[in-house]
Image 1 (spheres, each protein chain N blue to C red):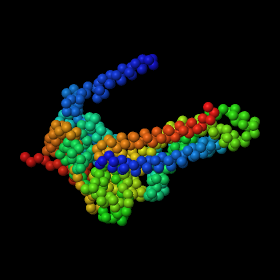
Image 2: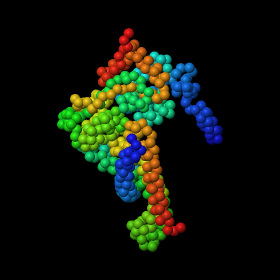
Image 3: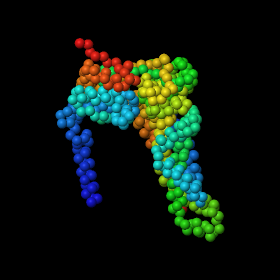
Image 4: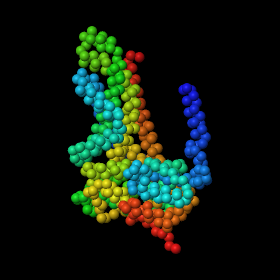
Length: 275
Length: 215
């Protein structure tokens, strides 16, 4: 019996090796896309911990503005949608190894212009400073000598480390604490471990919607645009997605999905094409 | 960012990793011994408590324990977490590793044949002297390979400290890798861990050799 089991397992392993483990019936074709019985598969790579763009929703499903928009886009194009949630730190490896077709997860294009083939920008974004109500911090200057928290590899983090961004301001902080997720940073803000959080306005508004008693400083840290990042040589797919995105804007789908996410609605920047 | 800047930036993280590693070892190796005695205590409630402590330490993720040590005082008593990060890390790591070390020591102590205790008693050794002069030296010798394993795991486990925004070498590697869209920082971190563990293994081997006084 044991021998039989071992034999079965090895046959399975070998079979898997031969099919390249892309899954049943899937083949890589020329431009990195996958075919499955004739229909194209579009694999959206995203971070599951980046609300409201991509996250686990109240029902435990993968959701968020970016996820819904990508699904709508696939429906429009007649593609098969496939979710590829990844660790944000490994996004480039996931993209370059072909595990996903794009990085689409509240992804900032500013400062990364040359690293990817970019779609049109579909959302604006501003980086803000979040403090507890009643904090003595009212302006960016007041942050001198304070402890500020930020999530690793986010645009707020990049901005604070960029010589042309807010590095100078960052140097006035007592320290910059770098967290794996904003959830932990927010916890630390509540428990008094840090004085302020540097965060994207949309993520910040999401956090503040979960707990009262926090506000943004009036003065913004910086601003930027979100877009979809493709492999640099994958401009064919990029162009197709751009076209489809504009079509979703024109037929109202983009606006419809945006309304479900009031905290980011005012930042959606695509306009219907003029006819 | 040049390779050199990358290396010097990460050097700071390496120092933090080594600091956390060294302090955890200094705390947990002796504490593990205390835990064994508590577990072997004749007073049952203490033995049960110790057993529960070991079960929790081994049965839950270390990262979760770190979060509990850091945020627990705030959620339970409303204490501010300001400046408590490094102490919380040390408490979390030391208590966790002490539990593992305790079990390793116990395996060594329990493997001693009962005849040695009987012989020592006949020769007039006190209980304390039996343990310190006859049992313990043999136990140390026996558990060393298992302890080496645990110490090497500790070197790599320090990366869990990133849960509390402690910038040790692996979280720095993640940060630099993300901002530079490069895998090089991970490679540097990998080489660092390898060298660190090679040194650990070498030192432990020397200690093992020095204990081979009978063969």
